[in-house]
Amino acid sequence: MSDDTIRLATIGRILRRRRRLLTLLTVVGALVGYGTSVLFPPRYTASAPVLLSGQWEERELLTQVEIATMSAVVDRTAAALGWKGVSGSELRERVSARPTDGNIIKISGTADTPERAQRLADRTAREFVAFAARLTGEGTDPEAATGAEALRRKVLETDRRITELAEAADPGRTVESVQARTTLAKLLTALETAMKKLDEADPANGRTGMVVMAPADRPTGAVPPTRPQLIAAGALLFLLSAVIGHLAAARVNRRLRTEPEIASAFRAWPRVAERWGFARRSAYGGVKALFTGESGTGKTLSAEIVTGMLGLELLKVDLAQVISKWVGETEKNLEAAFRQAEESHAVLLFDEADAVFGKRGEVKQGTDRYANLEVGYLLQRLETSDGLVILTSNLKENIDPAFTRRFHFVVHFPRPAVPERRRLWSLAFPPEAPLAPDVDLDALARLDMTGAGIAAAARTAALRAADGDTGDGDGTVIAMRDVVRGVARQFQREARLLRPSELAEYAGMLREDG
Image 1 (cartoon, rainbow, N blue to C red):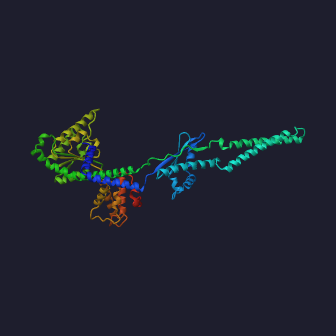
Image 2: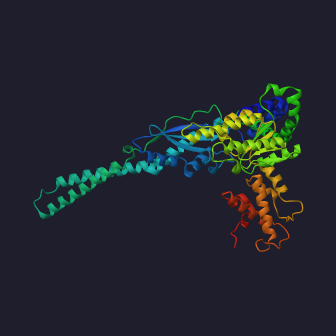
């Protein structure tokens, strides 16, 4: 059975057995979500489109979008709306703009009611159009429009008068008349140039015209998260938290029951095999277990605990002495280890078993065939063993799948969580060890370390504290500074980086040794 199937079965069992508690927690989560929706009421968003005439580049459109959300525009909008207690700075967080296809800018407003959202979008759009018109000179000021028109009429009148004077002048009979006609011609040219520039500056001839295409539609629904969404999210969050909490508790309980269960199964095997007749029905004898997990998570220690519960000896196989380069010698050494364990009724432990119980591969050269023969021998010998055989491995995926169905127990040892690390730190220092009052076990438990790493760091801290030359004290107590340096040494041994942020307020204790 795979780990995923086991997890699904555990979740199903939790849902069946704890359905009343889970239902209660789900209702509480829904109430919390409803309370959140009351504290943070739903919001509504409306949008008003503004059309820009002429041709606009993307960069220019983005500039207009920024102008639409400027404080000058929003402040004028706030003043025009006159909402009590709502200032321009608050409205700036509720107003947004974005360009769309066809030189259209959509100005959106968000408020706590659909009516207010519609009014906010419409008013902001109108204030934007008016502000942009004033920036480009295209205002609606009657005096400004009258002044520009009066100036144009005056220029036209002067041009007509200069033409009449030029025609009435003496046609070049005297020097004075020639000079007068020349001066009049220059004035006429200057006036024509001024007329041309005045026409070019006319806003009606440019592309600065903007118009609000249509009033904003009144929103029919609130923007996410809505009240139903908050209620559903609260219920789901509480349900998932409860299920995850039960899974974590089940994992801890399963870990705590593993060693006694293995020992109990081995004690019961003779009765099951002989009196109940299971030996005739099965070719597998004894009890086999596989412990997997990272280095330092307690696999070998658990094997020793099982052995102690049974009151037997632990026979640990030294792979360096067992594996041989000579054909057949490895099988002989393994057979000797199995026989010794069976004759002495000892528990046989294969530490780092993936080195021997590896996967069989395709035969590409002569040595591959002999390697496959070793795995085949172990498969057969493991079946016929009547004792307790425990395998440990850091790499479960490297073990041949054929061994999996021969194991009665497959136990995974994960890295300890914060509560487990807190307990490991408290056990790492013996009761007679002089711990200083400043040793913060809660802060140490936040560091991601295995049980073996914690024990090694504690031992290093004790050695530093006892040595007056390397420790900071007089060798009578183990201070927090000693523990921090012990942790730093352990991280260096594991080729890991200890960040000062992981130590929080104790980061200042990290320093290079002199």
